Image (tube, rainbow, N blue to C red; front, side):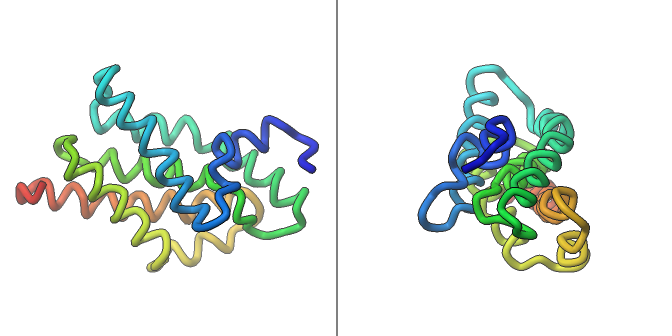
Length: 156
């Protein structure tokens, strides 16, 4: 049982990390839904998701670190707040937001998060919560760069 409820809520992104299959994908979807709602109903532009990701970074590192210590694991599967930071960073690269760019952001982030090209694979070796979150942040940056380039060529 988690002794720190705040870390559990943040780290599992409101329970998305408890998905029985593919918790990382569930966490990414759990980040996508509020992002779409913020865009559609509050008018958030794409770049604002980089601001949200930056604001979420420190609490994500803290929560991931607490859960990792309590579980005695380097990167517990229930921690998915790192996917939130990474997906929001990817979305920030969109030149326009529409269903195609949302889908592309989701696919690109998951691709880079699973593939872990350099230096993503190096960042996950950092100690504690920082390593858990930093690799997904870098995967999100890669996703943002590809999404931005695709937008420059009107591919979505």
